[in-house]
Image (tube, rainbow over all chains, first blue to last red; front, side, top):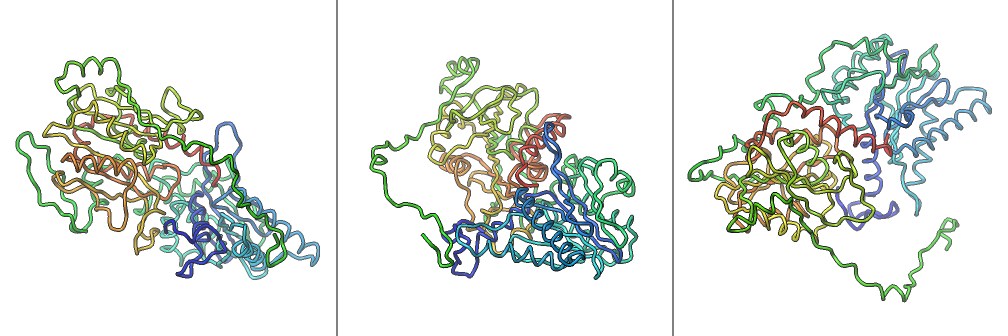
Length: 286
Length: 274
């Protein structure tokens, strides 16, 4: 992905058949902090990492309630997320008013997809720069959906988006079989462990940087912040991190060299000579 | 003008204002360097008018500067000079050098190792100014020693990285390296693959080093995060064992604390993306 003459407008195709503006918009999601969605047979949950706010301002919310049966976690441009959440709320409200029933999650998500698609095809507009993880419970059971700036949406068994979310996705893929039969506490514990994997080793999950949303069969969408999330953090307290977590900075020199070396490269740096230089055969090839 | 769908779109006027032709082209300002009085006095005594130097580390950009500030800079370093290039009136600088908006380029020297210099460049040095930056830097620092080593640290966004493997599969941030012919040994990181290029000030410094036959290595960190975070700063950590940085490293128990402060400073700035 790099600058070219076909990336100024969302209405311009490149000769390879790509629309670069949409691809660039997907990068905006990676600038947001990590958020993870998981579901079992009875519940759907969202866990999210909150960014440290300025000391002068209040926290920006990462998990937004939409209706009693659905909530969303955001990653990307905050303002776009606000607009989309208002849209979702009004769609849900209209459904309750017109049909006296909760809006099925799949219909909500397809409405978002249709709204997002318009922006990818009209001159002078830009795609939304936000990805959503939507957790909901309807007559079909619990759901986790992911939406993208590309206007695509995906029905997921579990998903993680945002910065460094690859580590979380790896954790989730490893434990995917266990989620369906989990109790709520076990599911939340898995979510928090996956979230912890996105953090560098000296940062821990605390009630300040972590947010949790839960919806279930007999449970309206509820957000847990600050003290309320403590009880769930206690579930994973004292556990060792998985080996996929990034190595600590204080690791010994031997430990640090390993990620850097590749086949055919490397070897220790030559010691600085006091006398004549030691010429090494230089490996210029890749 | 109306589009195909009937909506009104503002169209830009292509009429050129005649007054615009009278505007002068903006002149490109050159880099200025200022040395401390101690250094100026010392330089006067030298036959070549330059400070002897064996190790020069240049950290360019916020991530590399944050790494150097946390892990290399200790109380044993003191400021001996500053380079001024491309500063606007609107640029704000703090005295403590702890603000993300600081646009300064200070040259530090180690008290215990007087021939070791560290340059932290937090300014946006444009490609047009890179040559005068390099010239000014070496106007007072001698690279004539046969044991002179230079290490250039810089960073770039992964969106600039070209490869047939999708960048997300490469697990950013990651390090790549380049070196001059005279640099013995192998850098602690894979070489930068074609067709990728390093440009701007780091490229100017490396080119200068190659022309002057200096032993120089360049490390570039490709990161996907707009603001420096733990991962993109710590990716430089293995370089503490590389030449010439390992000769400058001293006991630094405050490194992690300093790093934490810097990351927190930048994370507070990052409020557009949640």
